Length: 177
Ligand SMILES: *[C@@H]1O[C@H](CO)[C@@H](O)[C@H](O)[C@H]1NC(C)=O
Image 1 (tube, protein in one colour):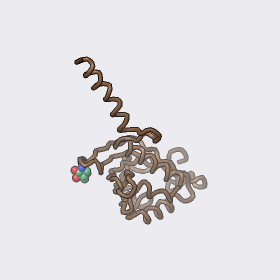
Image 2: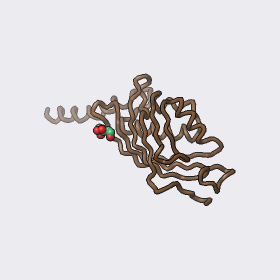
Image 3: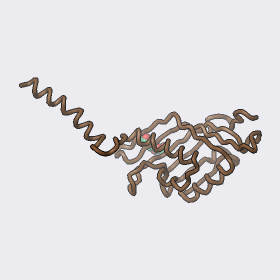
Image 4: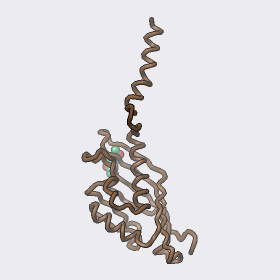
């Protein structure tokens, strides 16, 4: 009898876990940490494919993006989704861009609705017509001190605040300098 009770209790664990992460007929959903990881990756993909109309799926309407520490040739301050979209569109114009998102340290707030996130990003920009101009073709090893929140409107984790600094003394001319 004890065996049966213990067995049933043990057997119910995987069933209840399965129920929490996947409902029949719908895709499994990530937990908080992976949801933020995925959002960071989706944001990078949105930027690299220049799919600017979709930026609002990954950043809040009142986003503050502050990359002024990178210097006036490489960074700036954007307040709000519209200004961020305009500035990013201008910054990437005429170039190929790639954002490689790597180390992410995610510190959730107690309510599970916000998180402090420190992320390293390697940002490469290539202007095929100006491969030797370090203002147009360069690589930056960025540290991003970010604040992510759950947007009540659609339930997505979104970037609300980002402070971007350069891990290196200056930008790099990776191949063409
Ligand atoms: C998040 O970062 C802010 C600003 O640095 C800090 O005041 C706060 O304590 C941090 N929250 C957590 C949960 O680490």
